[in-house]
Image (tube, rainbow, N blue to C red; front, top):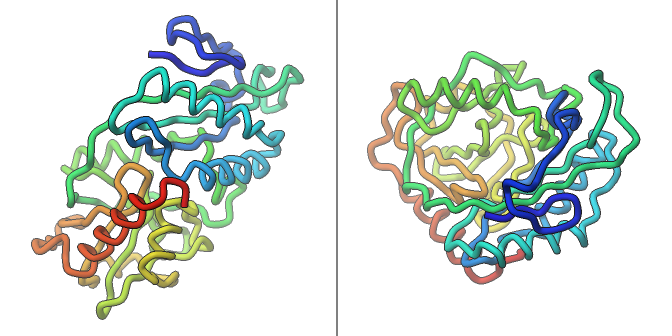
Length: 273
């Protein structure tokens, strides 16, 4: 396996990030996960736009998107897996042991790993922790992911593949690595970005392609919704057949099934929508 690091394609064992990299010591970094199909990235332009927004939100210099594109092409050519998880990581680089940044420049790492297609439906649980919709990192895709690690481990202990958060106001927000949609009276709804959720790439495409509405929703809507589904880079559109102890045995329901079909067709027509 080869990765892009320090401006070139390198063997994984030869790629060395400093133990004093700010991305490691204080989580000062941003990242993107991009789906790659037969060696070609999906929605790369949208992902790079969000990478730049996240970097600016942290006060990092804009990433060199020409280099990022070259890096993506290089690692995919070196390892053209049928279905891949392309990971772009961009950090504050070598720095002191405190919160201050150093002056040696940023770090860029791009790697790809093989993955498999997710099942058509899954189980989710809600967690007792909240998203802060007014925090300094709200809406940014940063490497400060420990909160998601803890919540996802909780989900796995309860037989689920994803954990769903409410925000500090008790409104439905998002999953650890996904956005959540519900069907009410036959219409698709998803929490607005103001809820504190990440503006997911698959979320945006699903809204555009299905006409889903952005709606401020109580967390309790998960107990009333006719259908529930998740969206993310590697899930695409995935139905939910259980929320906590509530079973939705018909999942994917008709509205979700249509959304799944639309996403599959539209994403297959254009790899960079």
